Image (cartoon, rainbow over all chains, first blue to last red; front, side):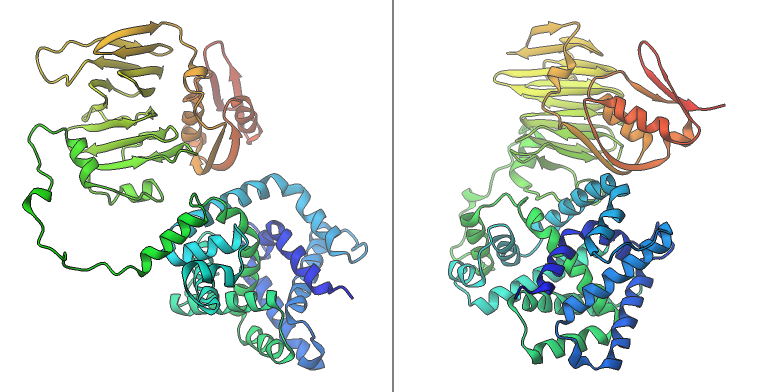
Length: 171
Length: 347
């Protein structure tokens, strides 16, 4: 059995440019990012009615809520009937008018993120780049640097958090 | 959405989000899933950070690929963090190891020896930078920075330039390679560029200068550049040439070796990046950037339009795309003349 959640999270990553515009932009949309996060959060709380046990995959659940909200939002904005509930279709429709802008956005973000990575402490930078660019696992990296896999993961966590905080300033 | 949140709290939430995100990739058991859900439900901040982490993750491969170091280089870099640097030298330092500051050593050589600056973020850094400083461009990419006086510097791949600004003058020394200087206006402080022995002097100009094996090459895109064989301060020196817009000259061994009255500026600036990329820049600044490529100059006649801030990316050799873009702005009119392109307000 294929795991639909894994597919969803991959899709979420792939469609991040579009998602970004709705989730993480503070300006330019009346229905702004904070509202959206707030709404995702509230729906997450409401789901408690059915008991947390029912939520087998919280991440997939989170992404589903977010995607549903996007779809509702898109329907509201475009006054078009929601045709089918394939996430792809909705995202595609959302993405088309602003594809060029999304490309610029992505390139800009990539460069900013690259600058942030360059400013990380030597180990955080080395570990992050080896993991994401060279696709080395924790153990392989640990062997090269003479540290445990656990430490490697800690460095990645630190590096990711530093990048996230750095990028949040631009969002 | 990070306003008014304690930075430590934010950092903590980001770290937790990162940890959960990584755990998620490895697979969670039932107990972990319950804890993850509980964490998400704790705060909208957690939801925001987790969504933010998902997005960041998608950009990581691309961004990490920008890192110039290979695995061996990174391993070496990481090792430097562990190395404990003794605060006191193990051996008393012999006086001879302290570099002597001979009088007469050009300031930029001192600067080169004394200052090794890892420059990140260009202009932002320059505000705080004590002069002099050195700027380098990596072998792979043209480096661009704007200085306080509005001078825009585009540094050719693998080039290095020393910069010194003071109250009297703006001074550059091309240490290696070449650069395009788009000089900001400053009626008080002349701008001079040393290229080997030669000194270039200009007022309000865009020009390209490169070091050659035994001299310099200069191409003037707009304005005028005076080439001196050495420091113009000494009375004996006479200028080698005054170059005007569209001209190109080579100087070798202190003499004018070549002069082209109608130079192929596109060829001379072929090293410039193929696209122009800007963010929240004024229309006037972007127009200046296009002008540096030696096409028909763009004249933005309307001050309000000139000050309008725009973001985007355009093909540098195709200013028409930019002009067409300007034409789409409300109330803007574009007139193509024989010598320039004027952008004005519709009446």
